[in-house]
Length: 193
Image: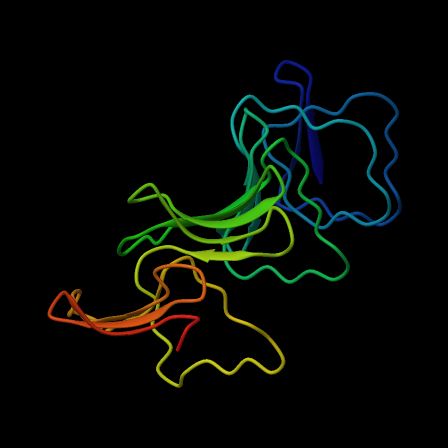
């Protein structure tokens, strides 16, 4: 049977389970400290909560909204369609929970950047104009670089042996090519030949 207690505003099943034989309808506000069970059909209205609003499966929080409006997802997220991030500086953060460095990918005034948030350094930048690519620090291409068709443009030094900073192949001026070893120029070819 069912016991209705007006003093405590409660409905209790004597055997611990309320079996629904036909639909139970409600008009107005339903207040409860917890809801357990399946929800079928459309749910409309607001869910108000002062702490985190959590979505759980198997007793584990899979996603939640915090009171500031941030949405967090645990585990693998699969999406279809497009993901659009709009902001003055839209960013995606990659935080390594068991090591450093951490990174963010973001649009900085039209330049796409991969930024090392641990060491405050831009590691790779594309743009903002003509698609130029800027790579910070040393860049290693173990299988070489193939450009077909294309031209590599350099400001001055085209090649320098890793760990040997005083041996270089350079373009020190217009129409001039030079080779340096031990910090001294050993060969220079100019427009006169």
